[in-house]
Length: 126
Image (tube, rainbow, N blue to C red; front, top):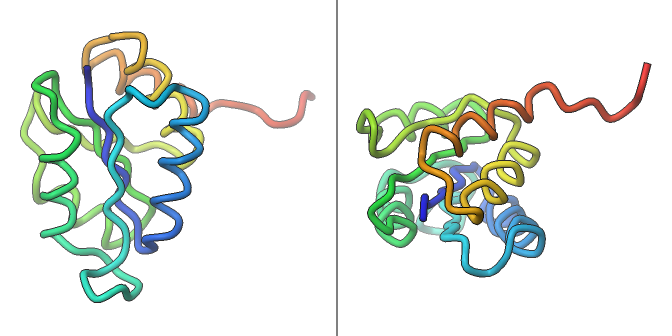
């Protein structure tokens, strides 16, 4: 199954988004949070991201979803084409779409595509 790692400036935001995604997509989806710094502050940590990747990686690839700014830059440092990819998607909506698709056993390319489609989700009808 494709793993998903949430890279955020906030440990709480990453952890709660993982919890939300698990409640919708199921507990078996390999999700990991890499939020904040190692000392509990606001920011990003390359070490936390690398640990989260190892935790989520089941051999079918890992999708990284970052919140903004330096979390995107940190995530870009660990990408490996075809194996560890960074999605340019809304943090919560992209995570949910990716988790549901990963949980269905889809390959990395389809999980990324599902997350990308979340960019167009409308909350209000015209």
